[in-house]
Length: 178
Image (cartoon, rainbow, N blue to C red; front, top):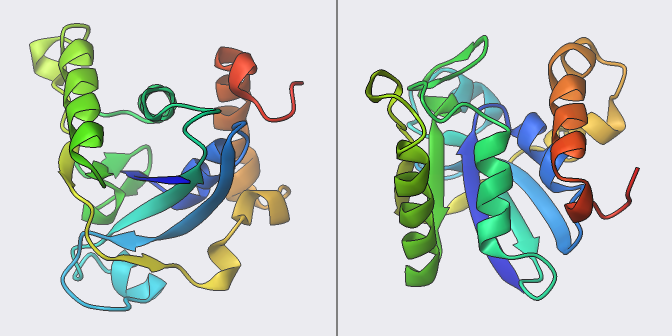
């Protein structure tokens, strides 16, 4: 089992997408990259802790590669907006890849370099690449939020279109085609 940790806006969105990939066994929403231990959602939302909303992905690298996870990650959020994804604004919504191995760092840097050639200089990639710090799982009500609350307003307006676009773009990676 391998581990990947990504931050790219609201962790509900990331969880909703990554949990649908074949080879992904668990997606845990949580917080990392901040200053204090065991932060709460309210503390992270204040922007004062330095944590990012993130997901930790446990995956089988024989079924899905880290590079494929990176491709999905960069397709489902905007890596050119600093501390913002859509209407979500603050350092807790920053784009970050928290690497667990030197190989993950190499692959992340290669991916950013290849994508930088696609974006204009005025829209540079701002994704942080850092060693994986302590990861703190979010409160239980955040886990699998989209699956548990598909009719909630944020889910229908923000997450559902993102999931639909992801499913159209990556049908071969889905754990349940459809």
